[in-house]
Length: 260
Length: 270
Image (cartoon, rainbow over all chains, first blue to last red; front, top):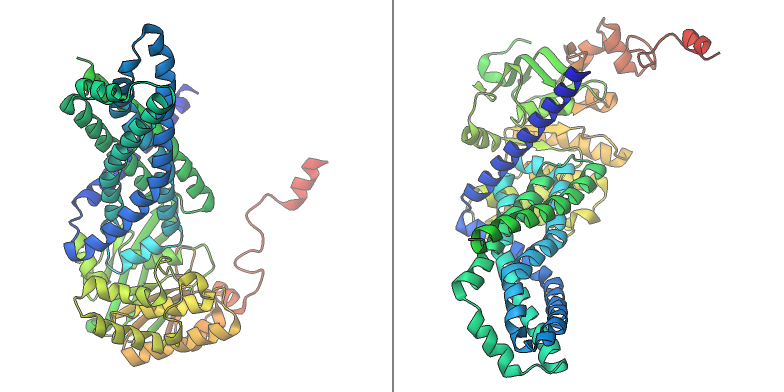
C-alpha cells in the first residue's frame, strides 16, 4: 500500500520533471532558433498582428473600465479625508505598478494564449507539425519562435496602452463626472509617479509576465495530446496555469521591487 | 532479394521499438530497393505509421539500425538529419496541408524554405507539380475547400516539390472513393517511374497494393511474416499471410479479442 503510494508519487514527480524539461527545451529552441531576417520578419509581423493588434480591443475596453472603477472607488474613500486631489496618483500608481501589467497578462492569457494553444495543438493533431519536420523545416523555428517573440514584444506595449487608457478613464470619472480639479489630477500624478520606480518596474513586470504566458501557452499546445479532448484540456490548462503563474510571479516581483 | 549494396535505398536491420511497455517491433529486417515501389502491409494497429516515422528519424529505435543510402539515421545528429530529410518526403494520411495557406503556397512552402529561387521560377515549379497531380486549377483554393481526395493530391504535389529520392505514403488509399483511389494508384506508379523515385507504401488495402507494388512485406506480430513480389506472396504458405490477403474474418488472427471462454463467463453470471 505505502510502497504503491510512493511509487505513484515518484512517477508523478518524474512525469512533471520530464514535462518541465520538454518545456525548457522548447523555450530554448524558440529563443535561440536563429530566425533568418529574410524569412523571419514577415512571420513575426503576421504574428504581431494576430497576437497583438487583435488583442487591442479587449485591452482598450478593460483598461477604460478599470480606470473608471478605480477613480470611483478611490474618490469615495479619499473624499472622506478631503484628499480627493490625490485621486490622480492613486489611479496612476495602481495601474502602473499592478493592474496594468497583471490584468493585461490575465486578459492576454485568455485571449491570445488560449488561441495559440488551440492553434498549435490542432496543427499537431492534423500532423502539420510532423509534416513540417519531415520537410526538414524545424517547427520550433517556423511556428513557435515567431509567436513567442510576437507575444513578448506586444504584451508590454499592450500593458502600456492599458495603463494609459485607464488613466484617461480615471480622468473621465474623477474630473469630468465627480468634479475633482483637472489640473490637480495631472499635477499630483506628475509629482508622485517616479519614472524608474513606477513606470520601468511596471514594464519589467509586464515583460516577465509575457515570457511566462507565452511559454506556457506555446508549450501546452506543443505538448498537447493530439485529440479533441487533449486540445480542450491543454487550452484550459493554459489559461489556468498562466493566470496562476502570473499572480504568483507578481507577488515575487512586487516583493523584490517595492518590498525593501 | 539479390541486390548489390548501392541498389538499396533503405535498409532496416534488426529493428526493435517499443512505446511505453508496449513492444511494437522486435528484431525486424527489411530492405527497400532503389527505384521500386515497396509496400508494407499489415493489420491496423501494428505501427506501420511508426515505421515511417522511424525511417524519417522522428522516432528513435530502441535497438537495431536504419540505413538510408548506407548512412545510419538513428546515429545522425540534428543537422545531418535535417539535411537528409531534404532527400525524403512523406505523404501523411490526412494530407497535413497547412491550413492557413492556399494550395499554391503549400506546394511552394518547401521550395521557399530550402532555396532562394526567385518567385517567378517558384511559380513555374509549383504549377508543374500541380499539373502532375491534376490540380493546377485549384491553386488558389484553401485546404478547407478541398475534398479528401484533392487534399491528398495537393499534399502529394507538395511532397514531390523538391524532387526527393524517397517518398513514403502513409495509408494513401484509406478513406478514398473509388475514383480518387484510382487516381492515387495511378499517380504513385506514374511518379515513381517518371521521376525515378523510390516509394514506400504503407497500407492495408490489399487489392490496390498488390496492383502497384514491386515488392511487398507483410508485417504482423512485431516482425515481417511474409515478403516477396505480389505473385510470390499469393503462393505464400503462412496461414496468417493468406488470411490477411483474402480478408477472412477468422483464422490465424482470431475474430475474438483475447477473453475468458464464453461459456465460463456466462455461467459465472448465472
